Length: 552
Image 1: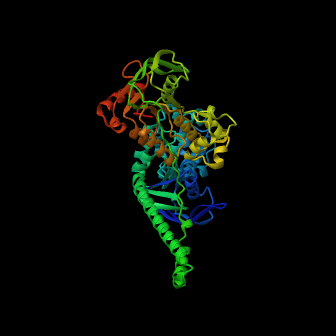
Image 2: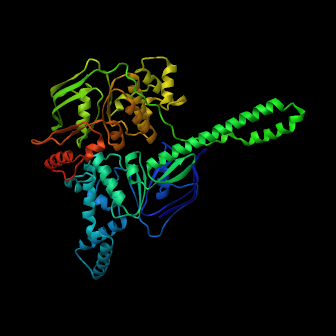
């Protein structure tokens, strides 16, 4: 259990939160939410002791072990993945290494024997005999093949390192678990596995995430960082959202009433301040008006960009046809005889464990790459705009955000471009920053602005929610739901897929036999629940040698 008492944190003149009083108890999962920069990760660092606070106290029950998801992906390069996971339980790992060192001695003394006996007892009490098996189960559950378990961390790619560090945090049944963006880098099946793990986890979990479906699945409470305080709500993310809408309406109603009252008072004072018989009443109303401090109304830190895609022309019935596309990268076949017909009204989510297959398909149909064989044709009425996963080449420039976006704007007037950027949360001096210094989230908002100005009636998006906060994800989600054209996209956000897609195409592992693709007109949740699809997927992934059905 963690108890937070009168906690405050102030950076310069800015108060992140003040006088926070919270209690985090076992058996509950707490989601920490708030706008970018509100202090979510900072709050976790305070709880873990990594960061000092200005005032107050953080108390952890005696003998409670805390585990934290590490953010340094290169901290364990010289260790095998399995050993890195066990290092998540420092006491057990220390006993294990000392035990191994004693047994490795050539001159084994009587004192060594006594110490070894003590270590054996500690090793058993701490679950040492089951440690490697548990670590292996965690790694497998998070999508690492058994061959990866013994490989050095330096040999693993970035996404696998992320999974090993997550397994490290989960290892050994910690009393308190702090997770900052644990779903980053995970495919949909790994996220589903993590959801089940946390739902069954008996101790205290505190998590920061931008994944709405994940927060809904695992959270029993939500702590909202806003208005300079941290407010707890019982229930999951959807419950918090409904409550927040009600509270915001109430706050707006109260402000409106105060403004109307102030207007009445001002009119009375102006009318009767020079009237001797009403002077006392006018003076009394002045005092009331002074107490109506309209400037002291709390302001939310949440900002929603405006995301709306308006095609310049309606799309026709012939959208896109692709016939037997083949593409290989570094001797790995990413697409094999891939055929596709896109129809008017389609909003297609592409799934599959080979993330590069989906990116390759998008690159080919957008003209960025050339297929080795096969062909594709766009309909005469179509115009597309492409959001690639890797966008750094777009921002290798000293141009300001305003001048950068002006390149893609049909209206070159600076006032128009600045106004457009303002709706995407680049206001004032922000719009003059050089694009090469932008954060990941700012680059995504620029790329979305570029797409909105294109007037395209087909949108191709490869992982568009990466780097966005919940507010921006919600705005993008709503904008794509309302879009009247065709969408082809790839995402690891369950809610994003389920709310937008009306058609699912899964690229299965490439093999000599069996299904290569599954193509169904249905929502994502229905796709996952369909027993016939489960059977098809099970057969395909068994051929590939995977013990898990993996999406992503």
